[in-house]
Image (cartoon, rainbow, N blue to C red; front, side, top):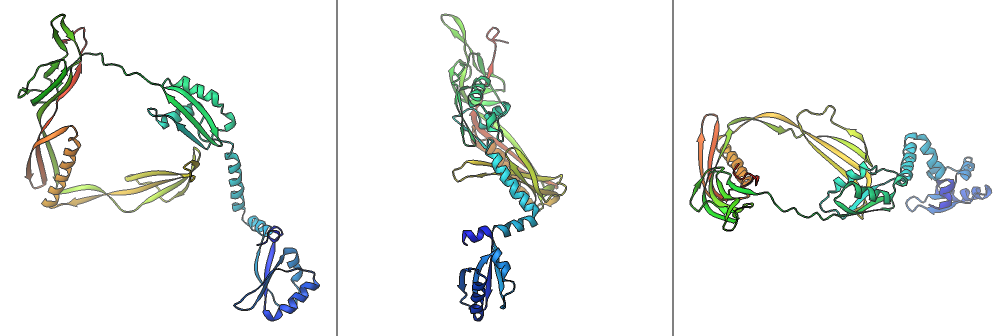
Length: 391
């Protein structure tokens, strides 16, 4: 469409091919210059465009004309006036776009390793800076100085502004590790049979094959010295031992469980900076018994920069109590699965040597009794005061 016609508004008409000569004669008499004259190949109709002002002078033509299209800024403005809600929405969007260029859209934090991004954002918020804060209120140098003074873990901080993005660059202070100075003993954390004591600090008090009880002293932090009599140290090392653990898993034949109904309800919210508002709600009254899954997706540019607009979706999956009946084979398979989960959760620091499994079936269900023999480190560090080492 020609820009001049769009600016003043236009209408496009069609006439039959046999009326073309009369049409152009009438247009010439009315001093109207037709634009974009074309002939349709399917039916041979002649189409042309003219301004809205010229179209008002074509009402008394002796030939029939069909209005094909009308448009342009005047037509668009007229349609918007008939839809005040849409017009207000466009004006509000324009206003928000203008205002958002004056505030912080995003906060980018660089250089943090030990300090979390969330913790640093909380510190900024305590200093009055967050997403949505007016850029004119932020003094970058003063903000960087306040951060260094507020947190001794920050040795250097610099705040820069890149458009509507506030960039915080920090360097964390190097904190020297404190050496362990408190003396300690090693004691057994469970009943066991020692297989290999590996003590590299302190005096070892056990040997391979020895049976010890929970709490028994394995290595002492008080070491006899030829020159000074006794010295106090921090016992350290490993004491590998055979331990025994018992697990019990019970699965009834009839049980009431919570199952998902398959129905999902959701709430949709719009987020603008740190403000949110619910725009869609399908749940009515929320269920008292349901799984709740919350997710917020922020709009990002192709470069990865996050914009201050986001959509939050909260999904509610209602649960209903149902009675489940199992046969013996199904109940045993479920019991074995639960037992495997328990063993896997406890296997991180253990080496399994033996496993004995016993199954007991009664009228109400199946019970698994599992005895596991493992090799593990049973040394537990217990500190004591050097002034009274025997207390």
